[in-house]
Amino acid sequence: MTDFKLSFQSKLPKLETSIFSVMSGLAVKENALNLSQGFPNFESDSKLIELVNKAMINGKNQYAPMPGIISLREAIALKMFNLYNVSYNPETEITITAGATQAIFTAIAAVVKKDDEVIIFKPAYDSYEPSVELFGGKTISVQLNPEDFNIDWEKVKGLISDKTKMIIINSPHNPSGRILSKADMLQLEALLKNTNILLLSDEVYEHIIFDGEKHQSAALFPALAERTFITASFGKTFHNTGWKVGYCIAPAYLTEEFRKVHQFNVFSVNHPTQVALAEYLKNPDNYLELGSFYQQKRDLFLSLLKDSRFDFKPSTGTYFQLLNFSKITDESDVDFAIRLTKEQKIASIPISVFNEAGLDTKVLRFCFAKTDETLIKAAEILCNI
Ligand code: PMP
Ligand code: GLN
Image (cartoon, rainbow, N blue to C red; front, side, top):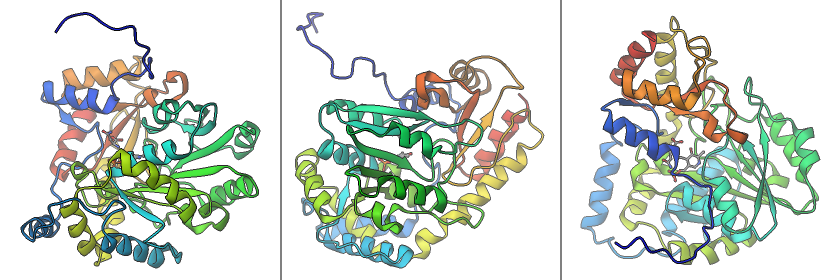
């Protein structure tokens, strides 16, 4: 192609390729163990795969209804009722999306206007900020204390203005593995009550929670639920991130706006996987056992790392573990992550890329959604560093 370029202003001039693509690409090139991008290296339940095959053979191969098939939306409503004792109307309050990423993007697109402010907590999942900016909004970042990742709600209160359109929370939190407590949610509820501020509660790791803790969904708090888009991902729950199926739950007046964008953003989502997921959700064990499944992996990984030179606090949710390397080197986290991938053949995610102004706390994120064999190999490498 020619080098000619029209005079053209990028809408996201400073945005680089997502760190997940960069590190996974490097892991493949370097033939390294890939504990960077968050995805399992084991298969989804064969029963679920059979259900997708069956749906395809049964002719569920044309467009699904725009908001998703009703049986799947009903199954999600039932799950919400059984877990949190809250009633969402599957007709008007639940929409199936192409993964949580699309749910997040669509919710932001539906409500954020030019000059609106959206409060986010850093380190933050990398899709929030560009999605807000694309629609002319501005993110106001709160950098979390790197020791405990606690939220200072007084500080948040001080950042709220008449421009604040939305707050985005994520619990269990990627990348810290921290969870929001009931006290956190009550403080947030008190802060937002009697305001017009919306909440986006990214709950993709809802079922990956450890040590007997309970997930504090925004759905449990009435003054939050009335203003919240909850986003969720089957990819995280059923080990099939490549299927890209998730959903958004929101009160009818918000779902109406959400669907106005959704219908031209994707129109509708992959049909046979929806049929399969609706059937698979009928057995709650399929998601209720996820916490103990991943807790065993976390415990295995950390027990093997106990004599390493990395410092850590056990993750309380998600399938990520942070490891602090300040006793090993004073390199930047990005340089160290790249060097580990090239020289030691193990890939991770440097968390400065999710921090405000690239704050480097000498911490790498490792994904433990891996077979025990991979975790053992990974720990062997890490213990030799
Ligand atoms: N939110 C968070 C916090 C995530 O870690 C991810 C990543 N997987 C997503 C949203 C996106 O989920 P999905 O793969 O379903 O788009
Ligand atoms: N959520 C995954 C992670 O945090 C990756 C998602 C993606 O690659 N966009 O690693």
